[in-house]
Image 1 (cartoon, helix red, strand yellow):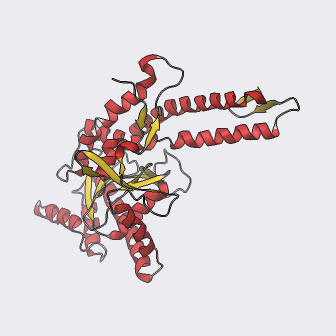
Image 2 (cartoon, one colour; image 1 turned 180 degrees about the horizontal axis):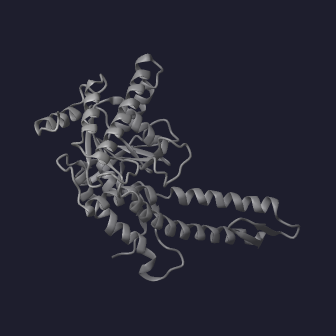
Image 3 (tube, helix red, strand yellow; image 1 turned 180 degrees about the vertical axis):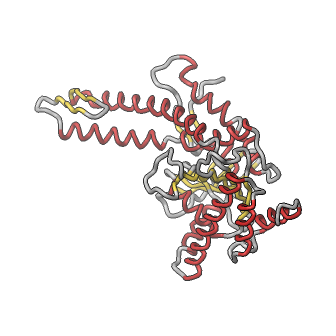
Length: 369
C-alpha cells in the first residue's frame, strides 16, 4: 500500500451518496457556513473533507506511521458501501450481530474521526501559550507557567519550537484518544434501538463536514455517554438514521423503519446539520440552495409555520416512543398495539401509511383483539 498523504476525514464513500455522478466522478453542491450563498461550481468529493497527513502518527518510523489511515481504509471505508445497502433496503428488518456492529462502527466513526476536536484543542493550546507569554514572562525573556497538564518553562526565543511541540502532543493525543473513544462508544451503543426514516416527499436531506448529531432530549450540557442521547445521521438525500437511547430490554438486531413526507421534518433536520457543521454543508445539486431558500420561507413566524413546527415535534416524540416500546416489549405486545391504535386515531398520524401497514399486518396475523 502506498503511503497516504491526503486523508479524507469524511470518506468519499459517504459523500458520494449526496453527490452527482458524472462518469464515476462525484460532485456536490457546497456552501461555507460563513458565507451567504452556495459555491457557483460543484466541488469534487476528492477535494472536500480532506486533511494533509491528518492520521499520520508523528515521531514514528516505517509503516506504523500510517496504521490509523490503513485501519479506516480497510475496516470502515471498505465496509461502508455494504452498510449503506443494509440501511436503505426496506426489506431488511433484522441484522446479524456483525452487521449491527458494522452499522454502528461506520456511522459513529463519522463523529470521532473529524478534526473538530483536534482543531478545538489546538486553538486552546495556542491561547494558553499566548497567555503564558503575555502574563508570565520575566525581564530576561523567561516564560514560566504551570498549567493543569502542561508545565511550561522556556525562553521567548524558543516560542516557535514550544508551539510545534505542543501541536505534536495534541495530535498524538487526538489520534490515540479518538480511536479509543470510538470503540468504547460502539460497545456502549450496541444495545440501542435503531430507526431508519425514508423521505417520501419532495424535500431533500443535506449533510456536512461533521454529519453525526448527538443530542440529549433531557440534558442541555453535552455528555457523550449520556444515556438519553439520540444520534442522528443523514445517510443520503432521502434516508436518515436515528439511534435511540440505550435500553437493556431493546431488540438490538431489529431495524424499525418509517417514512416522512412532511417538508418540516426535512427542514428541521437540515437546519440541525448546518448548526452542527464545522465549515461546510453539502448536498446534491440544488439541495443546498433549496435549504437556504426554505429556511427563509419557513422561518417566517406565521401561524401556519408555527403549527407545523409544533406538530413535527409531537410526531417525532411519538415515533421515538413507539420505537422504544417495540424494543422493550416486542411488536406483538398489547401495550404496543394499543399505542399504535392511539396514534391512528390522532389527526397527526391518521394518514401515516407506515404505521397503518404495521397495524394491518398485526391484524392479519391475529394479534389485534
